[in-house]
Image (cartoon, rainbow, N blue to C red; front, side):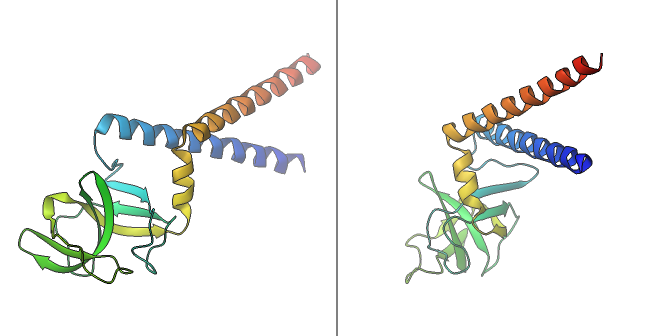
Length: 168
C-alpha cells in the first residue's frame, strides 16, 4: 500500500510541476512574443468566450489553432480584428480574404476577413477546458498554484529530512 501512496504522491507532484511549467511557458510566450495569440510548437490555444459558434463550439471550450498556408470554405478560423480575436466559419472565399459567419448567428459578418488577419484554423476542440485556461491566467490562481507547489516541495523536503534524521 505504501508503494501506491508514493506513486500517487509522485504523480501529483509531477502534475503540479508540469502545470506550473505550462503556466510559466504561457506567460513567457505571451510577454516576449508580442503576438496577440501565443504560438508554441506551431500551435496556439485560446478559450472561447461567446456562443457565436454553437453548437460546434461552446463558450468555455478550449480551441487548438494551427496556422495554415490556405483555408477552404467550411473551415473554422480564428482572426484578429481591431485587437479582438474572433472564431467563425468561412462561408465563402473572397479575393484576398474570407467571408465568415458564426454558426449561431443569423447573418454573415459585415466585413470580409483579410487573409493577413487570419491567425489559424481550429484543429481541435477540448470541451470546457477553456474555463481552466481562463482561471490560470488570473494572477490569484497563478499565485495559489506557485504557493501550493512551494508548500508541497517544502513538506516533501521536510519529510525526507525527518526520515534521514530518524535513521541516523
